Image (cartoon, rainbow, N blue to C red; front, side):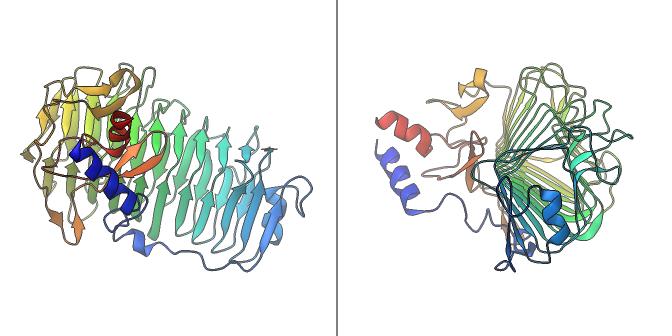
Amino acid sequence: MMKNLMILLTTILFSVSCNSQIDNPVNQMLKVPDSPQSTIMVGPGKDYLTPSAAAQIAVDGDLIQIAAGVYSGDVVVWRQNNLTIRGVGGRPQIRANGANAEGKGTWIIKGANTTIENIEFSGATVPDQNGAAIRQEGAGLIIRHCFFHDNENGVLTGGNPASNVLIEYSEFYRNGFGDGYTHNMYIGEVNSFTLRFSYVHQAKTGHNVKSRARVNYILYNRIMDEQDGTSSYDIDLPNGGTAFVIGNSIQQGTKTDNPTMLSFGAEGLHYSPNALYVVNNTFVNDLHSGRFIFAQPNTNEVKVVNNIFYGGGDVVNRQAELKTNLIGTYPKFLNPGEYDYHLKAKSPAIDAGSNPGSVGNFHLTPAAHYIHPMKAQKRITIRKIDIGAYEFMSVRNSVARMK
């Protein structure tokens, strides 16, 4: 009871959505939009009926507000810089319905430093079967509170070493043509990619998350095949670089197209240094064979600390720093049938972890939990850190027990 009260009071006093570890150093490179030049209203009864009409008159720095509704077959090339494009009054639905822009996808982003919020995208297809709901060609992209489903690719970015990409509080579901070359999301060779507090699941044969970024922050997400998903890797980082995979719930289903869950450098290491940090994740392998982690043999450092590995399979293919992981033993999940991997009382993961340290000024100790669907909760350790993506007696569970 005392521990419950301490956790509850601490959470009331601190914000769950933002802290120094969650706002990692790369996030600071992302440009925060200034006050808009002007606000353009889109939708029935507004100044402009469609997003494509607004794109024709927008200038750098504008705020585009799109009213809730269905926008079918309306495809757009956004050329301006520093745009914020936001759904209001509900989530507008952008349905490609067979249309595409430039043979590439539904929205083509050519400008720099674009923010897209609260919009649903579906149906992106193109003749070469590599269409994307959002095709990013400029430098700098923020996506939050969006939903991408049933596209050939959800988000596809080009290679740009000056670009930083952030996706947060968003859902990606059933994207992919089914050929293994299209994915829920595919990030090109950019400077950095951050994915956090998002629900990424059931890609069609391709990967749930694929990124060629120099630095990757995969933080506090739910990445899964669930019952009928056919994805290949849950996370594919094919060119190495530096990757922080922290605080995620990662599940592989029985219909997976590839028995490896997390892959690093499988297509060759393109950066220096190359380091993989896998800390306080919960991996569940319902295939009961295969491998949790593949890391290219020439990777400089592989650190695997405080993770749950459950369901069978090899932990990692090469020598790595393995410390205080729970391997094979049933962790006593709260509701595994619903893929809820919070811990129950007397779990062997409780108070069994260790301090994972830091890399430069980035602390490897997890600062948050993913709470389904697509919410954040501050992670609080009272005694010793627990193993896995969740600290036992998080506020969600504490409040339930106190009622």
